[in-house]
Length: 164
Image (cartoon, rainbow, N blue to C red; front, side):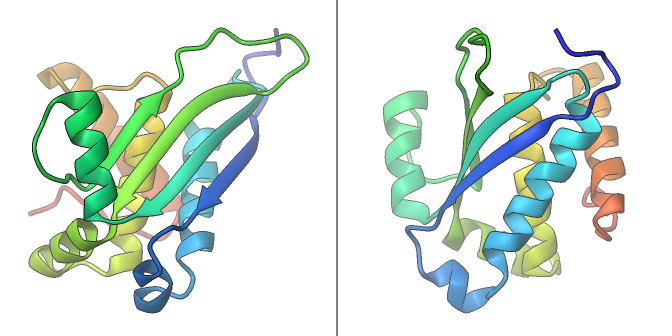
């Protein structure tokens, strides 16, 4: 097992089946990948080699995944599917998948007066933290997760996404 201070060496595999990301935010792939790596560096201490996938999809894709895996109707901004697989010696630890819905993310950014790239960064960080085991189902864990999100986003030049 790697020392607790070792920073993760991450493989971030990105796919973009929704071309609207590229049109609305030409640097979307870079923004998403940088954000995932920042979350892993800040929250993934002791993780060692790791791999995750990011999918910049659309509402239809996320709604289908939400219906199939969470039994919920309609899209949401981000879904995180932790692999739950035990580590395999000499291989990167497979963390899981983070999937984002373009139309929902774009609409939320507009409604909240946020830049699209900043909202994308926040949701990628949020999704990666879920892959690392963070949760916001109860008040205490939610406060810890949000505080960590704020610290990570500050390193990326994004202001507090929870500030009213």
